[in-house]
Each structure stands twice: as structure tokens, then as C-alpha cells.
Length: 209
Image (cartoon, rainbow, N blue to C red; front, side, top):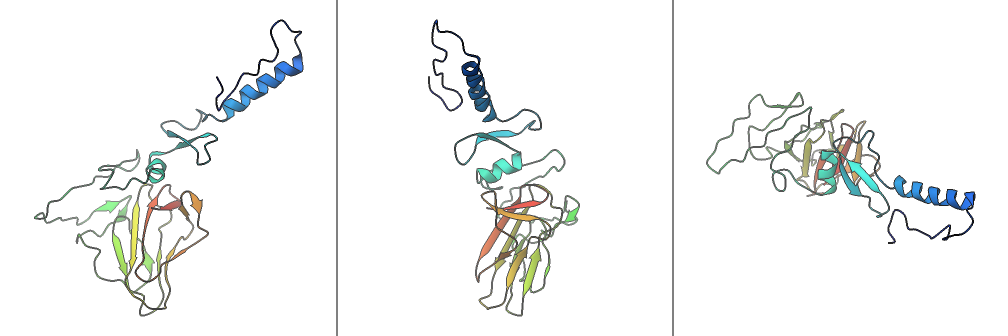
């Protein structure tokens, strides 16, 4: 049966005289089929997908798989953890009063004392995981910079409030910002009213979701 890995050719044919070159060609075709399969070494505990062109398998970490499948924490995924950084997600009722004083994520303080995105920020600063940020650039350029390194699985959200001609930017720093696993080529500039959400698919790469 024909397939994507190896299709038998009938070479050499039954009762024909063997040809070493013809047999080597079949071994080469077999090897090419195995080249499409994910290697075991270095890919322990990863999830296997078919690549975007449908030509080979690829291995992804849990965080990368979540981005690839467009799964959102709190919507599609209720709890998510990596071996090095355990995270807990709480579902609160409308009458609960959360108190997250002293909460950190990967050693970085997280400001979640208010369930809202908080007051508009008008100055440049480093983004904090899990805390949504409202930015007002009406008074001048505001740059929100991704931390380096990031904690894999961290979520960053920035919303631009103003309609001015000033620049509002999310700076990659030493990280790479990607969309559908492709480098966007540097920083992100937000248009008036625009919101961006990024997930750290690794310690140095943030994927737009």
C-alpha cells in the first residue's frame, strides 16, 4: 500500500538477477521514510505533531503544543504546569475577594491585587507575567519590555487605551516574538485600541496568541 513513508516499487522483481545498486536504492528510500519520523533522542515527554506542510513529524513541548493548538489558560486549559515551575489557577465566584499579596511567578512578583487590568500606565517598564496592562501613550512614547529570561508558560497582555500618534511598543529585549512559530522581526507596535497577548513558549521566545 502506498504511504508517506515508503512505497514498495517491486525492485528487484521476482526471480530476477540481483543488482546491488537497485537494492541500495531501496534502502535509501526506506531511510528517507524514517527521516520523516521524530527522533527519540532529545524528545522525551514531548508531543508529536505533523508539521505545517504535512511532510514530516515534529516534537513540541507542552507549552509549545498549547500555543500550536491555540489553547488558552482559563478557557481551554484549566491548569497547566511544567516540571520546574508549578502553577495554580483559581476559579473565583463573583462574590469572592481574592488576595494575592506576595504572589510570585518564577521568582517575579505578580501584581494581582485587583482582578481588573488596573489603572492606565503612562511610563515604560518591564512586563510582569499574568498581569494585564492598560497603557496610555497620549503623553509620549511608552515601551513595555518582555523580561529576559522569561518563565516558560508565562502570559503577558497589553492593551493600548489612547488614540494619539505616539508610539506604544512591546519590546522583545533579547527574546524573539513569534506568530504561528515564525519570527515577527523584532518589537511589536500597538495601534490605538489594540490588545496583544503573548505566551512564553520557551525562556527566550514569546508567541502571539
